[in-house]
Image (tube, rainbow, N blue to C red):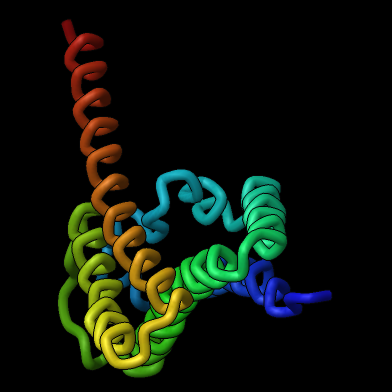
Amino acid sequence: MKHPEIILLPVLMLADYYLTLYSDYLRLKKHSDYFDLESFELNLGMQKEIRNRRLFSPKHCIGVVFMTLALWCTSLAEEGVYEFILGFFLVTFGILLSRHIANIVMFDFVRRNAETIHGKISVSYEFSLCSSRSSISVSLIPLILVSVFRPSIFVFGGILANLNLIYVHFAWGRRHRKRRIRSRELQDEARS
């Protein structure tokens, strides 16, 4: 195999799914006593899978196969194209896995040190998106600095990945608002 690193993509994607499930499991141990999240999973397309704690998600597996095949196809193209797409995918899932690890550390801390938190707060989906978007943005400046001093097509793919994740968070927010507005309209019609 010319590009054995392709195997990293499905590994990272599966780790993303299972770390999400594990994070949610830990969150429910104690964290949820203090933080009432409107939704733990931010990806609107995967909320049902996570909420139902599906250990096997056909939807996610199809995505893993499709994205791995897409990466493999780009490996047959010009080297620069492959390097850019590889940077895009690996940085995307590197950022997502970092978020999961941070959540796991925080949820475990709350589980072991519940006395450090008092009261309860309700957290809207919009606030969760903003918080996640801010965390994702933290890696953008270091990537840009790396690209200035050690420019590479891989790093440029990583910068685009970071910007894409920020954009996707805005898109999820818009979709969520539209759903909420539509839901209110339907409730108003039902009352009439």
